[in-house]
Image 1 (spheres, helix red, strand yellow):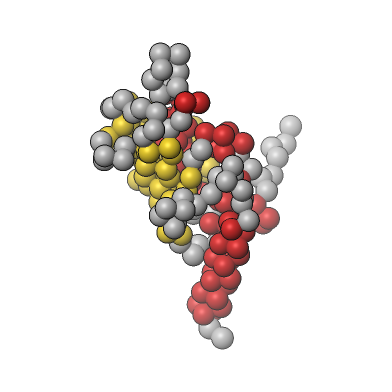
Image 2 (spheres, helix red, strand yellow):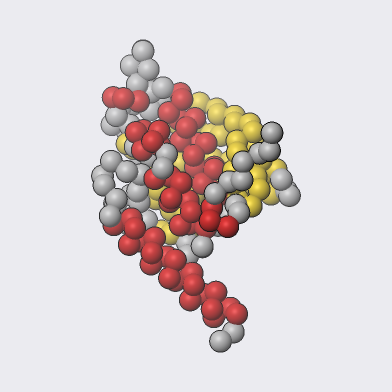
Length: 185
């Protein structure tokens, strides 16, 4: 069997395993947005992305959901709840920064790279409210051998721009098994 056919067969198997694993997630876990049915690339890296997000208690607590993943692209959604408010009853800027960082990091990780945020810039453009459903779209702008530049836009359900972000990530290929190798001391 040609190598390409074997690779495509493996990707289909990985995608099947991802959807099987997702169906067992509880509603309190980070998961595919059921309303959009999720548009998932059949990249082998997607399984690792889901594993990492499911292990992120903060992303789960905030309520971020994965809508779409493809190589170099990620789309997330978030329904803003009371827990997202700051002391002035507005939405806390850290929630929006978290969503942008998570979205851009997902775009980087979709390439099989371990993404570590080196710099994050968020520009707040609009004022969302509790009850708004936000959508974040992140993509890779430039990929160097170690440094990756990304961008993200977060919009409200009415397609109003809420914030934009740019991120610089330091990356390296994940070793076999998806575990990072600790730095030597």
